[in-house]
Length: 326
Image (tube, rainbow, N blue to C red; front, top):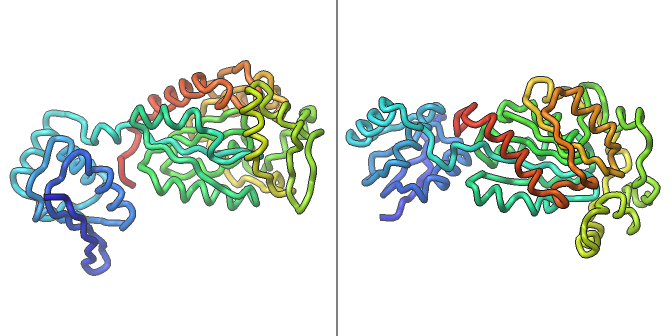
């Protein structure tokens, strides 16, 4: 019998009734159903068959505070044996932290296209926040909403201006670590522009045009932005670039997550968009584990293997720091 999920409310406590067989390949759907409906309990009275991975998932639900109602005796006994044996209480596909990306100027979530598929293939839950580059406050809010679409804990990965976004969004309790890619990283009370003013102006800003309240990159500016990509890739980068609001860099950050969360930083040594010395300053200030890439401003496109290795390192470091469901 195919598993069926029914949303049920008892008083003010929303719940989820499961009917049929629970199998490992359906656990993502069950987890999503619990999260989407805000279920505080799950009714198992009409569950007819459970496998080992499902038992481990049910254990993780209880650890996260989700009540299991009408749990069949044989399932409860199986859960007890698993717990007493000291085995993993969270199903294998949820052992790893989720990865949430945050893009920068003149880009959208597709700029991570070379690193997302390998992470997905390795079992990571991955999503890229898509925001409008209108205000930092709105972009941070969008990223925090995106965190709600994946399991926690999560790693935030920010490129360029996306570093400002994850610095603010990373204060969310679901975030376990931060990865910065050639990125800005303001302190509390600073804007995205504050520290840039202390370093030489980079080449890309001689190849922009302000129109309709947005900052557009001119076609020849792509050499300063992604000069180590193939001609075909550079044309695609420019054709899909998204222009930020003129005053985007004026938004202040209220709190800096890198002060309390572990951080990793990739410096792009050949960057002509964010000054490499600014990147080194920011990485040192936050006490990040730092790597240097022989790359333009877009290491995730020109050096995806290095970026993947750093994300994997960060994910391994924070693995198991929080329950699957929050």
